[in-house]
Image (cartoon, rainbow, N blue to C red; front, side, top):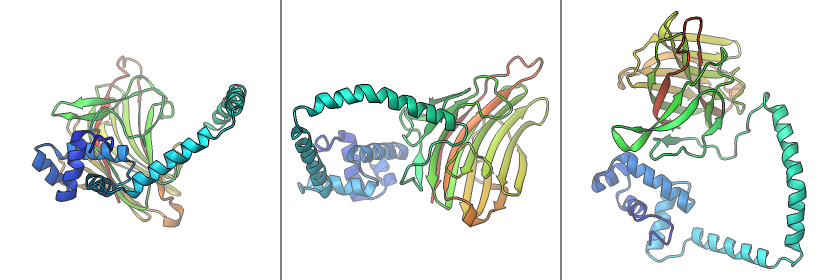
Length: 342
């Protein structure tokens, strides 16, 4: 039955158990696997079934298991049948003319679009797509990122590194690979948009920064749909500079008439819990050095009407050296997960 729906036996089993048990922890206990592995299989099953939620996937599998045709399956069959009629009903001359038009026009269109994008590249970034998520959990199970993450290439490297303590999990690594300008505009960026005016974002990071001059790793929350515009944003970053401030956790809040920076000393190469939150127009940055107690680092109040409900998470970094600083490159941060809750 699972094969007929395009699911592996394990995915089908987990979705079926969700129907009777109702929560991932119970399924994990019954099968003797981790909760993150259950969530990974459920995410794959949802993608294969075209479902937006686990509830829809469970309903679809249960109806298929009982031999009842579902509206979803019926709709897919109808769409395929209509598509077949539309294709087979075309006149014989349609395909040759279409092919000729494509060969002539596509290079022209690409050239025009490329020129337009280049002319606007320094002004605006990609507009957010419709139906942005209000919550998600990215545990980096497997060796790929969810499609919602986008990349701007530059100096730096993003990769998934195996977790030595869990063979099914990975770390998301952002690694400094060379000297950048004294901002991160020419660095590699990894980002994703989300929507909402009441949320909490949680991640856990492990920083590895060698001695040297300037090494800075950022997590930005940018308000609005243009990730190049940081006039209203939150920034939580770790800075290491053996010639200056040593190692600090730094939190910046920027907005109309607001520019606040708070500092906290931290220890490197130990997991650090980082938190952002928003309630209407109030935004806050928290951190937890031990994974238990949360400490408020910075909090500001904005005009809710002027603060967009579209935001972007942006991961980036920079590295710059000085005379005698031979090892200006190097250093990275491993993110264990990202969890956004409404």
